[in-house]
Length: 228
Image (cartoon, rainbow, N blue to C red; front, top):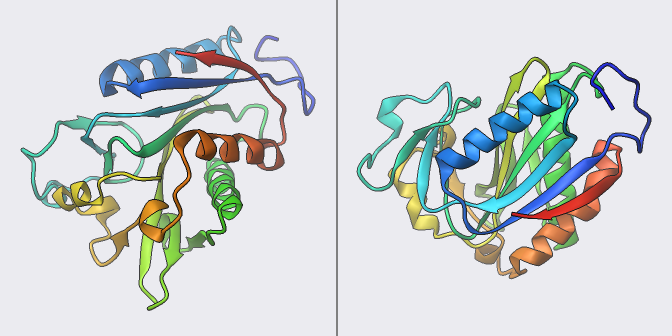
């Protein structure tokens, strides 16, 4: 259906794509931007793209150079999304979401809230209580001693009301790799992962939880599967 048409709850197809191995950052970003243009033209459906990157840092539009504490540790990429520095690497599930806000309400904050709710519901599948914070983007868990640690980062970009980028959920990354940056500019807080919390799902199980919770949050029916 062309972009100008009306869509009901299940008429907007969503392609689910899962890439095996480690996806290099720059080609992935280029493919995501191409998909945005295709969605804008009405030539492709929305996309949820699940993947892992090799170890790297990305800088958002608010990144400050003094927050890159070890610039020679991993490649650093300018992401163009909102936010500051973050780490991507093996064991982290990245979910890139190309979403057409022309049919979902032209409200970027509402889109971010949906991404947050999506992660919260997926974490609940594994018995983890993920929480929002009004003064900081992302999803947080509170440890028994009261420490707050970030388990998922969220950063989006919008082009003519089509979103891209998305979220990164720490399943079992090497948390020491976050030490080369001040994650998202929040140096007073730590980062954690499902495995660090003693919960050890496979990446496939995490993907299943994300997919199972999608329709309840975004209100549309996922359809096509592509292995890329």
